[in-house]
Image 1: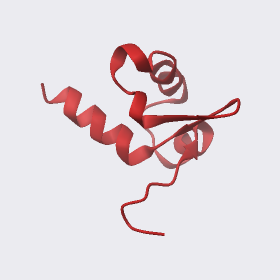
Image 2 (image 1 turned 45 degrees about the vertical axis):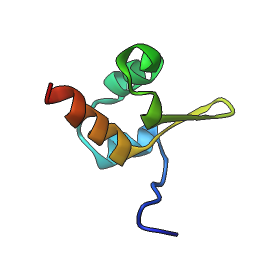
Image 3 (image 1 turned 180 degrees about the vertical axis):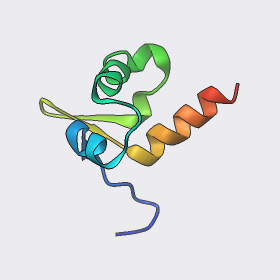
Image 4 (image 1 turned 60 degrees about the vertical axis):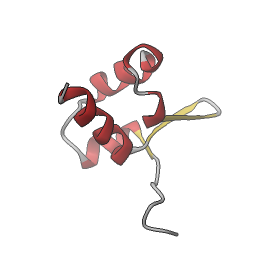
Length: 66
């Protein structure tokens, strides 16, 4: 596996590793990903939603710095 490859994690797995955003906030971001521009940070595999942590934090930094 290359260093530039990002491993997707479940929402619960993300919340166990990171304190921010909370599980509820993460679900809201994923639900509104078309509107808030976070579509690249979330994957849908069947019924399961996964998070790409590095991409999520990069997008949050980009949006927060404007």
